[in-house]
Image (spheres, rainbow, N blue to C red):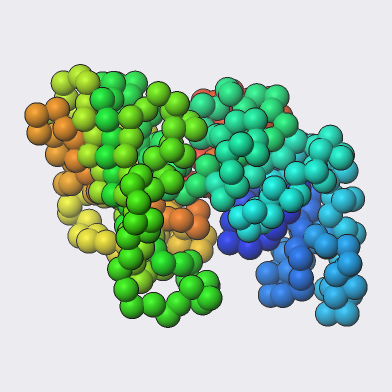
Length: 337
């Protein structure tokens, strides 16, 4: 059983911990938190050994009556792979800790690409993470775009991708980002950072991205235009994407008209936390005109990178190839509708 540690037990960390626990070949050796709060209590209640992420604050957990297994250095020393799920920029500060113990580490998309040996997407470049010491699981939006680009590139070739990303203003619990009443070009320059980030997975890809931030918390929505090199019909593209295990084609008859409907659907499907790990593509939006593909997809920012983290663990540890890992992860999580 692969021993996995998770530094940061917030929006992403707690989801990764649950996903790792669900795998038949992995075990959560512990999770680390900077302060005692309801998430720290939840981790202990779930049976995850809890470590203090900052040694100087360790006594705060003791004072709060929250059982503590030790400090994060001890966790890093005993695991085979660390998943750093801390806020953007903190992972870079933690890198020396992982190097000190010789423990491979995964980082999230908020870290700079030059921090790591490779940026990772399971569908696109699984093998490149083999044996790497520092791997970055790209952001939720980059993950969603990469999952779309990979099969299209393989089947038809791509001349150019153009995407407008309508981004949620914050996660549901991020009250510090609101309340807001505005629609903001974010950034006002072109391209947004998402295009260059996709190029860390597909170095030769021509892609332009624009970003808007809106007063919503549920999901991101992408309006995508792909100029294809090869001939394709809308029906053929639908069939191609329907075969992708991490793509959910939202059929017209489901009467799901937006992010709110998707979240309600996920809750009714008994998905943990109402999570949507898949790209949610409206089937009726898939249109091909004169070699240009158009579609809308929704990306659940809290969860679509979770299966990618699980696959990155196996890639770094060298315990499975891409197809085997993706299939194992999907089955263990119950992906697919």
